Each structure stands twice: as C-alpha cells, then as structure tokens.
Image 1 (cartoon, rainbow, N blue to C red):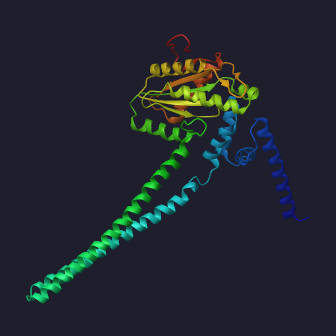
Image 2: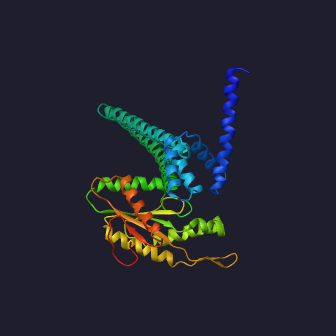
Length: 352
C-alpha cells in the first residue's frame, strides 16, 4: 500500500472515531444529534475552531447546561460562514429596484429634454410666422408635444408607484429578517448576538452614565427536563421570560443568554436600582405555578438565582459580563434563589 493510501486510510479512521465521539458527546448532554449540533460537537472534538473550543470549555467547566440552544448559538458565532444567505435574493431585488429607479430618472430626463426642444422650436416659429394657418400649425405642435409629455409622465408615475410599493415590501421583509436574526424564537427575547451589539453601543454612547447588568439562571433546570421532558422545560423557559418582561422598565432589555440563562441590560441604572429589579424578578418567578394541560400535572415550584454588576471605569463588555457571571455563581454557591451583587454590600433581606 502506498504512503498516500496509508495517509488517506488514517484520515478516514480518524474521522470515523471523531464522528462516534461527537454523537456520544451529544447523547451525554441529551441533545438530539441533528446536523447543526453534530457539526458543533465534531468541530469541538477535532479542535478545528480554537474560539469555539475555548467558549465550550468555559461552559463545561462552569457546569452549565449544554443544550441545542447553546450549540446553535455557538454555531452562529463561530462556524456560520455566510449569515447573509437568507438575504441574498433580497439583495438581488434591491439591485433591480435601483436599476428601475435609475431608468425612470433617465427616461424622465429624456422626456423633459424632448419637450424643451419642441417648445424651443415652436417659439422660434412664433418669431417669424404670423398668418392664421401657421399659428394653427404651431398651436397643434405645442398641443401634440404637451400630450406626449403628459402621457410619458403618466406612464412614469405608474412605474414609480409600482417601484415604491416594491420598495415598501422589501423594507418590511428586511425588517422581518433583521428581527429573526436577533430574536430567540422560543422566548421572543433578544438573542446573544443582539445583546452584544446593544451592550457595546450602550458602553460607547454614554460612557459616563450608570449601566448595570443582571444575569439569572433557572435553578436545577436539568432536573426539570430530565423529570418532565423538554416540552415542559420549554414552557418553563417561556414563563420565566414573561416574568422578566413584566419587571422591565423603560429602556431595559431582556436577553436569552444561554440554555436556561437570561440577561437584562439596565441602562442609566445604579447597582442599588438594578438589585431591586433583580429581586422583583426573583420573587415573580418563585410565585409561578405551572399546570400542564394534557394531564393537569402541577409542576413543583422552581426558582432562579441572579447576579448583578454595574459598569466601572475601564470596563469592557467582557469584563462587565464576567463580574456579573461571578455574582450569579455566588448566588448559586450560597443556596440559590437569591440575588448577589458584584459589590460586597447587602441591600435587604434576600440579597447576598
């Protein structure tokens, strides 16, 4: 057997081993081996994407749940090569629209030029011809030129109306695609990509204004999924998202940050005010009582743990989120169902 054949055989064997390990990885974390999740697992185990490996290692080391949502997010952030594919046909439509507008403008210019030449010619004849027959011919020529210009303008107006209607359709479709790219379909909250952009903008536009972030995690969420199934787990996620929404004020923005993790951006909000928002979310979730319609199963009460941090001088998005994350895990280490602050202060009972 040649050296090249040996190399190919070795590569095939490695690929087969990696494929089996990728499936085992997904089964270990109870994630269905759909192509997207499998691709992330395969890339992680092969070490092909250092950034993906680093992020997934951090998840595993922190003990967070690895689910299909997390793997989809990792795929979007590290493996998706062309995120503009759904918009490619729209780009072609926009190109055609611009071409149509350019053509209409050029045609309008030609029509105006022709009408101007006809008027110049008519006015020239008015200076030298004075008999009734000549005047009738001149008037007839002016009328013909006017009618031609009117017909051309009517035609252009119809085409412009169609173009404007198409432009409005594309605008609506573009907004829909933009929202789909930024919204988590299960909860209706922003996804991580939207959060990254918004938090960067908040930190850049108002660098001296107070800015706080709270992060929350559903306590023992894996137990809910294991005991009652993923459908009920999804219902829990939706109800927690709704509980968060009801506690937001003004410009606050909620994000589905991970599988069972959520994040809330609180612009122009001090640490003390952010802690109060966090406590209202904690209490509202703790008061939830969910009943499954199919069999009237009443789900046992569940809770969330929260961490809160405020921007400090020199903070970047990553340093602020890292401190918020540490505060969250202090809540989990201290018994869960509580709010912990980045600063070592206690505001009220129930806040660590």
